[in-house]
Image (cartoon, rainbow, N blue to C red; front, side, top):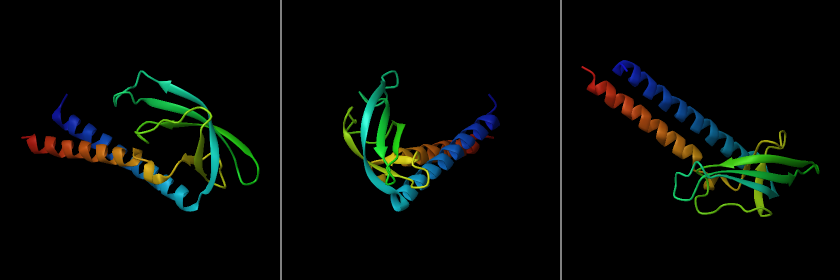
Length: 140
């Protein structure tokens, strides 16, 4: 592959990671600032063991159910990858939820302080952009 194309691809991937990480960070901050807090219950846990990158940690899908302030039941899945390395939720466990009052299906589990996904995405994006600059430096 031509070095110019590699440079463009690495820079593009880095820019997309930075953008997605920033969008995710803003979403979590907005929910933490303006969201309604409640308690939810983990109704099921799906462990995708084929994607184990961090020792025994993998990609987990949780089915979560909670009641909104206007007494509506919301059941939705939640996926975690990099969040909360030290603990996994168990079926039947009670967890803290912060949800958007106008759209209760938009929610986050726990607090923003426990969410490392935006930081990891943005650091990965900076790494890709840095690598593209290094490639540009190597071009004749």
